[in-house]
Image (cartoon, rainbow, N blue to C red; front, side, top):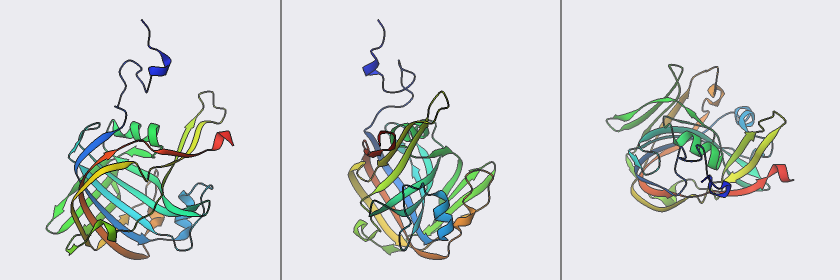
Length: 245
């Protein structure tokens, strides 16, 4: 008996490489540092379906997950920038770095998150959490932050949109097979926050021949947050299919 096509979710068809959502996470430790950078740097990584906001903000994230139901333990870092789409403001993530063999293809194929492989050094030095992201033997993104002030999740910068651009080329080379705007703002549910703290943070970007973010050198820092939480990751929402326009 063969496999019905409407039952195939991913490859290999008989045993998919990663489970489908929902995915449960426990005790994820996340640091977020907010800062401003040159508008030319932000514009360089923004697809032209977006516009720069009046006062753009950047966010560097360091994340370590000791347990997840679908992907096991892994580390992650990412850069997000504020932008506007059809008059509404939200976050766009131009790149995310991970050391997870299954979370990378899952994030790219399901949500369009631009995940790429990296090595990590994540830990705590007294009251400072640090995340060092290594590509080709060099740290291209370093995040360091403190957590010495009490905080609540409501105090953290929020946006009702968290956009990704899902892009998959055609196998015959004639353009794109998938080009969709995805919103992941409502992906997480059943969130339980165990720790929420605030502090100060710094980020450092070093030049790289690939995934170069060195022009994002901060011009101003806007604070940092640290969160430990459990949550469930669900399906995203397709905002627009550009190939159907």
